[in-house]
Length: 499
Image 1: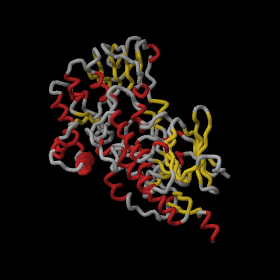
Image 2: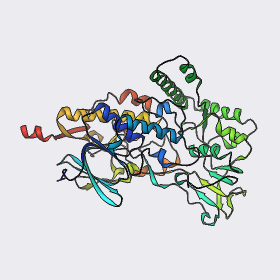
Image 3: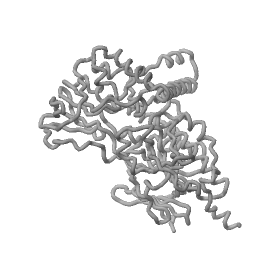
Image 4: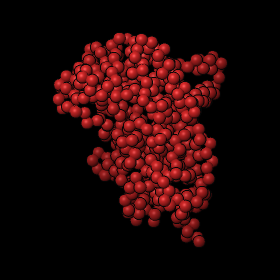
């Protein structure tokens, strides 16, 4: 039995003080003001992704009208830098009085649920010492990738290279790339951010890609915003109109990707041809897959294409044969020489922060659990994991999940119970397992490498992780909680004593 008098105890323990954890805490402040809360953050500051990554040009690849919180209108340009996003989060923490609710430097190692106590016990390390916390509800907001390890392929000959090798996740603060020859390996969001940011200082930069990604450019000072600002409308109105416009544009792209993928492909590539009329677009900007099977890379104001037109940027589409002492030899036989090689090769994913879970003393293998609506997990009581959208702004889903969690907490209070647990029904026995993120719908390499360790989704509701905002915005806010899957039990002691 847990002695809650010796450990800090709250109603809701949140793991992570990034955009999901801070947003969840704000929803609790608004919808469940009587609930006590605490956020445990392993790093020494808030912000998660936006505090971790320090590479040149680090910025959002989602517009901030939708990536920002619905309850706090974003006032800047739609594509924002990491410092701008951190300032926004800092303001949010201040406005909602969360500063004294965050415990920095607390790296959660393991968590355990006790049905007898209807309580989670959380073990964290802080400055080499072990600290314990207890909470009635555990809200996991650690993101979905490994902060300690990045992904770098096992490149042949890597130990021969005598230059500087950098992964963007661990960018050295003192790295001076002025006047150097640089290779950036990769074609995703990080690569297309790095290249225009580094272009002005390097002697030459080569973007080396195995295959291209789809790239779309948007004005970072939209004409609609200029029009609305001239109408002297309240800031909240301007924000909501811009938010809805960006959501509608994204919905149109998603719909076209499903219904007219060839037409969307032609439009996306045609826009690049207009920017680079004398470039080999067929080789270097035409992906092997159809649009939306992987995330579109968003660049503001054509900055990537402007950098390429500047003359000191090359794109090479080829496979690496081996690293050499001076750079990289390709399968075509071409050799690339570089002082610095940046391996923008992706993330290493991990479910729920790689934290060890037990329920009533029994270890939990997350890969054997089933996800309930992509939020809760079979046979794990009083726990939610915020996993946002992959192709729509992450926060669009984190806001929906936060509202769902608050509804569950209110429902438990109204029923006088201490426990809510998703459990398989008899008719769910033997249902077909699918990946947490369905490979038929979304198939980037960083997902394919890691999905075996993630919870499963089923082939029916509510065991699906839909990953579609335009469906979930209609179904999730009013979904039935008494659905025969969410089991509400473990009566509050006061009620049990009076029975």
